[in-house]
Image (cartoon, rainbow, N blue to C red; front, side, top):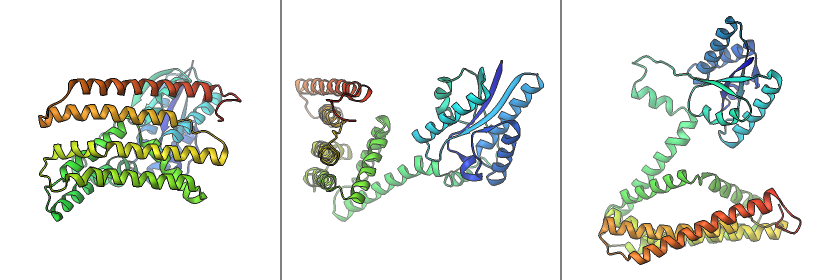
Length: 368
């Protein structure tokens, strides 16, 4: 039985830092790659995982086992692109080595995102996690923070949200002080954190990144319909947030929770309407330019109403629990019922469109 000792570099440190071409197959090439990366960046954890893989290989060779060692690398843009590259390299390694099983060497949770992809192609016999021991004096807070700030991945995932939250807190506190209002910095910060958590839970980062890319392409290529719809959506959202949301609360002595709830109530439907305006503009632009239909439009439209009704019910409940405001149980029940009905139809139409027009496209249906 042949076993493959597999090491994964999801963010392609070997390629980005020392120019190693992957996949790296064989003990000799893997040692060369490990030494090259160690000389370039001695603190990179991929060095430890690769040397651990080499140690595992040597141990099994000494036991007269039939083994091979390989390292596959992804891309610096960790995510879908890197995983697709890893999948392709894994297929290449499996064709060349033809193993019966794999021993997966991992240096942390990030590399283990690839584990299901490996398991779908070959049996994983074991997983070895490499934990680096460090001296106590090195494990100081200053060392950890300063080294984390040098890591681009840490800055993107942790540093940017912290900076944005602190900026929003400072900005709203300054504006509140300048306008003679109560300090709404904490309320604005809570809103920013809530929005960030909401984006993470529902994984909205990718759709919003796609929106940014669409806007950039629209500006570069002169797609005026989408530019106009984006501009209108921004005006709609800005009007809802500032004029209909913040302005009515001007000079009202509100607590932070009350300000947060009332601001959300006042501006929510305007912001959701802005999302709908942008989607309709994209639909018209696609149909006008290429004769194509924007498949997500029905799902987005229903999702807007789903979020609107459910969030309204949540705000009513929050007003009762936090602000002791009287509530209408019948109204809340109807809001929740209508919201879940929209949610059901959103899910149904999403899978219907995917099945009818994507997995089984027809000549008479929406074009791909």
